[in-house]
Image 1 (cartoon, each protein chain N blue to C red):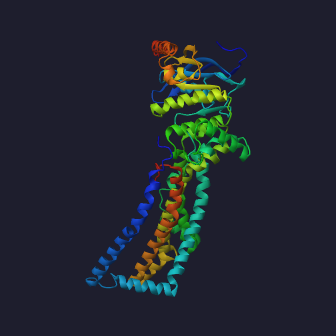
Image 2 (image 1 turned 60 degrees about the vertical axis):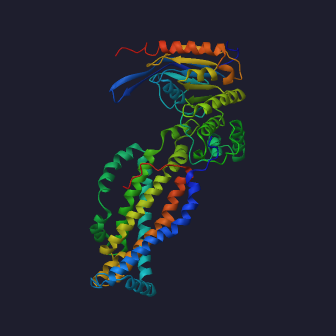
Image 3 (image 1 turned 90 degrees about the horizontal axis):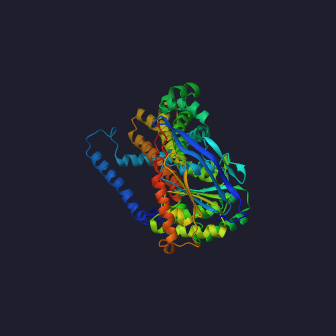
Amino acid sequence: MIPAGMTDILCAKDVSKTYFDTVAKDDVVALSGISLSVREHEFVSVIGPSGCGKSTFLRIVAGLDKPTSGEILVSGRKVTGPGADRGMVFQEYALLPWKTTEANIEFGPRLKGMPKDKRRAIAQRFVDLVGLKGFEKKYPHQLSGGMRQRAAVARVLANNPTVLLMDEPFAAVDAMTRQRLQEELTTITAVERTTVLFITHAIEEAIFLSDRVVALSGRPGRIVADLRIDLPRPRRWEDLVHHAGFIGYRDELNQCIHANADAHREPA
Amino acid sequence: MSVGDRPAGEIKRPKRASTSWLAEVMPFVVGILIWQALSSLNVWPRVLFPSPLEVAHAFVADIASGVLLVNLGVSLKSLILGFALGAAIAIPLGYLMGLNRASRDFFDPLVNLLQAIPGLAWIPFAILWFGLGQGAVTFIIVMSVFFPVLHNLLTGIRMVQPVLIEAVQTLGAGRAAVISHVIFPATLPNLMTGIRLGIAFGFRSLVGGEMIASTDGLGYAIFNAQQYFQSARIVVGMLAIGITWLIMDRLILRPIEQRTTMRWGLVREGIETA
């Protein structure tokens, strides 16, 4: 149950997105009437089959895409474009190759005009938090995939966003690293009390990380499940894989997604 | 995990440097020996096929008289001035076209037509407008430098990964910050390639331009030597041109270009030669 006193920090109101497919020469409805609220300190994952528009939804929240109709409110203010209150972590890391780990992480505070010693201290705190101590002066190409994604997470957190947006951030790393990054992320967001909107196609990942999992149907994406995940924290994979609750959530979401993979396809 | 692995290139470099000196000199030694052998056969008249020894004599004489260095100085001055002017127009125009849709739509057709015209085709107008001399040569170099610089810069701007721009936007970057922190550094390797190619194109036009549109410089010197059947001096001029280019390219241009790309671990892709 949602603890009392928590406020909605992010609010999507009836968000739809239609775009023109230049190959098919036809309008495609990517998202249809998404309404979703995320509370402060809440970790919400959005899952769905590929092409369901979950990444499009995140991009609309980030202000990188515009909705065809509906609106997004963050801290009560309407989203009209990208902004520092909605920092995003991308699957492809998107670190600036010409900046060191440290310079990447302190980039947000630097844009805000924070003096060098102050932002360096912040960068160091997040370098330590994500376990990149000793790699402050390395360039992104000198880091492994997992380390790059740690740096990308630190870069957004150092900027103190209202909500952390993550678009399949662990899809490009190997399975072992992925599990470790997932465990680290739950620890970090618990420490920082971060509000997170997380996009993935991996059901188990969503359950493992989240307080709530929202499932979208196949195209056009609409919400078909909104499930509260009531599992103990801190979460560790070795504890959860055999946890009855975890398995129950997984089966429920699996069923829901399969039943709705194509069910809502609109007639041509 | 490849924690702290150094990129392969950084490890290999010292090994290569130790063997490269001999490997680079060897072909020249062999070339000169063959050249000497051919000329000692005495099949062709001396005036058509000077021997390495004659060339060496002419080289020493031209150095001693100062002719060679004066001509080299004239040529380099035209090249540097022409390059500076060409780049000074091409670089701002490139960023304007790359960042502003309307100006790209306006300039693109003009650039496409004009870049199909070789720099040397401007010789007639260069002579009409500036008369025979360094002014005409400089103008031809400007026309030769301009397009490779512009073209590579535009390619570089096109190749900037959109996700880098989006990432910094979600960190609070506005347009100015996107340009200074993403677009400028991201285009630097391509810009360096453009500059290197621009100087290469300019250098070719320099020699051609001086032959026809000037009364001094290395290009003029070898053209003039031909009229007096001083074939050894032609070779001296040609070698001076070649060596000057090698020194500029190896010691200045390539290291600058490589430093930017290697330091950032960037792979050079889609770099075209205009």
